[in-house]
Length: 113
Length: 121
Image (tube, each protein chain N blue to C red):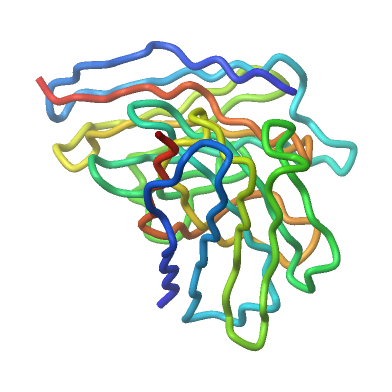
């Protein structure tokens, strides 16, 4: 299976400040169809995960534009331009280039200072 | 509005069986693949199994293959997970998730609230 490694494990951010989370995959997520199968989810406390970003950089419906995704191949980044209190939770990256064998990163916990 | 409601979780002894259900509404159920993803207490997310919209294709994680069975009843808009030979390490919240397409799906766009399965003597 493809291993997804997220850093940092946790992040404490002052409201209004930016935050950045890294996700590295053990194999390239670029498919022969030209798409890169990398996704970002946020799991708020006590809730199921919710989709933020699909295929590296596309925001899902209703996701604020302060969230952005970038990267290619094996290195990816989720950025929050100005963190708000409602952004607290655990962020997960996910790859689906291998099915079966879909895997998630270990998660990055974001807290507010 | 997409809604996914899991049920069937509970306490079961090692070696026992349990069947989870996921009732779906707010979208054309048969047109989308569906999946189960679990989360052990205090841990991260682990994909478990998936089934195409028609039910013709199934996928399993190595950790559950041969023990778990996935099925769906498109007339009842319901997804199932039959779990046999349960182990302590199967203890987790099990989430039902809707995929982005019926076939050749790539990600999950909506998730249910989850149902807790505890395997313990």
